[in-house]
Length: 125
Image (cartoon, rainbow, N blue to C red; front, top):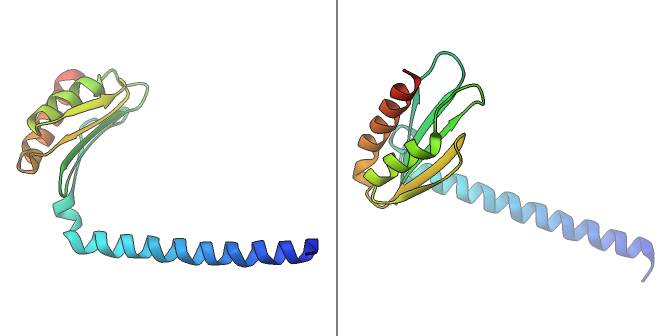
């Protein structure tokens, strides 16, 4: 087999891999959209005017919470995520500037989200 034959074979294989990956990605996106609406899946809240603090709560088959901040904000994201995740019946991990957690108590997402926002506001003074 010549070098040109190898290049052609690799090109054809990469084309099949690309088509397969695009098909799988499309199936996952369509399946996700059919689970529920974005409003039911995600809740976003802005909690600071200066610097950036993000709190995101999500619910599907389980509940998740994410807390992140920019370097100029003195908020302990890990402590806040642990507190919120305890309301979800789970735990959290990460660092002081980015942490995530979750649990199985999907019905507790609203309470966990509210507790996380309140904790961020308390930390900011």
